[in-house]
Image (cartoon, rainbow, N blue to C red; front, side, top):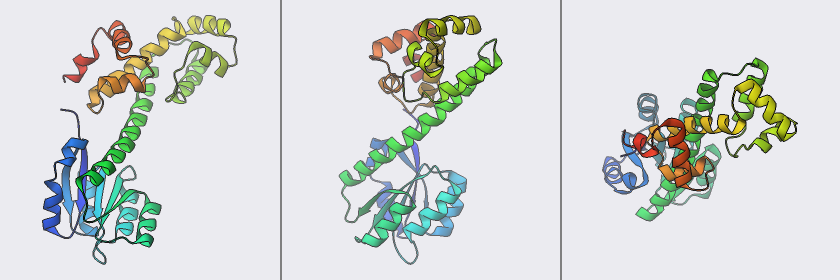
Length: 253
């Protein structure tokens, strides 16, 4: 089973908190309830202790003002995602919650399908933030081990890789970035790194793939797509050639 994102529910109605906690939609969407709070003060203490990825805040003024809760908790843990549930539709409050950073505002009575859709959006945002972090860490780790004779070129290349998270960096793309002819770039790169740019780049991508697979948050096909491979089979063959293992070997741990 993959790693699940942690959820904190904020509601001063304990019975409703239990009802929400027992809904099967959380596990189906890749989340788990890790904590609960009944006031802003409790939520502040809990967020520092449990570090939730998602906060579901039930707007129950004056005890729980959702917009104020989001503002306060964002200042403590900026990466947390927020969904608001309100017992009534309030356009002004909804607007304020969105301005503070909520990704959805649900009104009761709330169907499982509505919460499921909101959780899907939350997971997409959390997955993106996670992959951004893992990508930057992978670049740092990879270049710490890379044997490149020219230190200035190493730093320039590292900056280039950091800018390439959402693109597939071909030799042509890299040559254009450094303003070199493709053939000339290929020659100087091999002289400085001891291998072709394509070989170097694929080694990095497999380092990144390893980190994503070990995190438990991604299926193999999702990693393949994130890395820009045309098919899972091709990704798997490149992964095995470079690492000596199959992607599924890492997913078992």
